[in-house]
Length: 118
Image 1 (cartoon, rainbow, N blue to C red):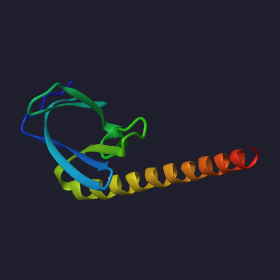
Image 2 (cartoon, rainbow, N blue to C red):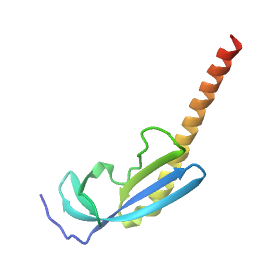
Image 3 (cartoon, rainbow, N blue to C red):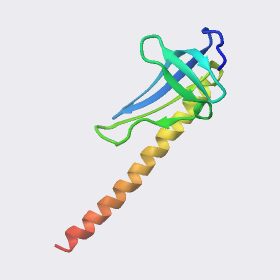
């Protein structure tokens, strides 16, 4: 394992939809340790998190189920990639909403077929 300077920062970029509001949050995380496979990072207040190098700059949907109009997606990156990750997160959330809409349309169609048979 290779210890490096603790001043290197990563950023957690989060995009969140809450019904009719869309918000981006960018929070700094300090690098504690770098190995060949992962980084150990930590927010200002909180627990240490391990980020595997192949997951850096990769948006991940945090919302396991769509409920109460909330969808969230985040990624860890370096400062020079924040704007790019904001675009990727926006695209990911748009894609998720489109998928949910298509599924809901299919559900409505199934319900309408069922009610016409009653």
